[in-house]
Image: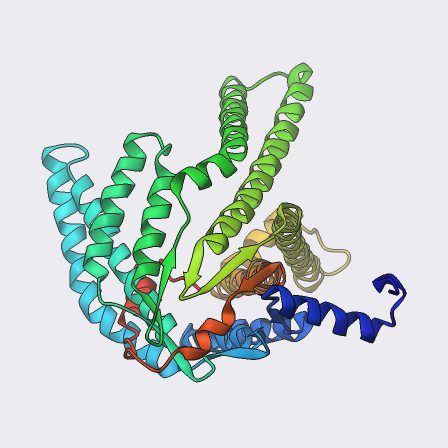
Length: 433
């Protein structure tokens, strides 16, 4: 029999597909074009900026529709049926609930702290509890707007039970110095997945806290060392600043700054690698009826995407800062030429800038605010491209599914959830993708 290596590319693809079918494994596909997605999020970010944030509900909906529709399992793509108007109404209803809650939280916090320090900690825990309630309801909404082969996903109504469980496990993780966190993550995933349905088919989760802890232990240990090193370097830098170190010790200060940057880079790399490990662990534990999932997400790919985002964000900040400095220089030089023509006694540039600043205070403040918002918009577009679109691609393209044919028996069930949870997350500044 002829080796597969000598087959025509088309014949090789057919051969691979036949082998996949025979083994029962299905490889999902992700067909979104990165360049068009970047222009989508850039355009959406600018429209969000021009509409003072009002467009964000339709912006988020468009992103989800793009990613859902580009993700296909066994030849059929996901469908996102949510609408921007639903998110807007959910946000308005949520703010009607959260506004008095925030006011009461602020007033009670001030009054309680007057009598005893840290007495407002229970209020903070309540806010965390409410945030977990909102996150569960938001997940219900997103799932109920996700359709595959004409059948929707949905979740049971257990938001408050989830919130209390999550808060209790969070306190346990804090008390154990975060050692128990993998077991917390596993318990919460089991809780959510066991209440998730595809039509009438129940989902489940088989990942364990020990499995996550064992996989992530080297990264967690290395991350702890990196954090200790960062705090040590920060302490050295703070002491040097307080003591106003003389010129002969400048070299040591430079080494401190370089060490600080190095350890920050190491910490980012470790966090990205941990995200890859956690994603693999999560995907491997998911079950939907008779369908199981396997992930081969690569640490190096996650690390590369995180650093690509950081480099892009840094380049945006440098470019905008250079443009602002250039404009300020032109203003100073133009002011000297306009108000102090050749032959007259011209003051120093800083005096010219001070005089111009007095006359142009409001325009300058408005311009700086616009520049800041533009920088945030550009960095947001880079974030959505690298850490949403490209990470999504990595997760989907390194995934395989076994037993997906069992889902063909699903029939419609469940009901669509409201977008109130999404609105609450936005109001709590915890809005997720």
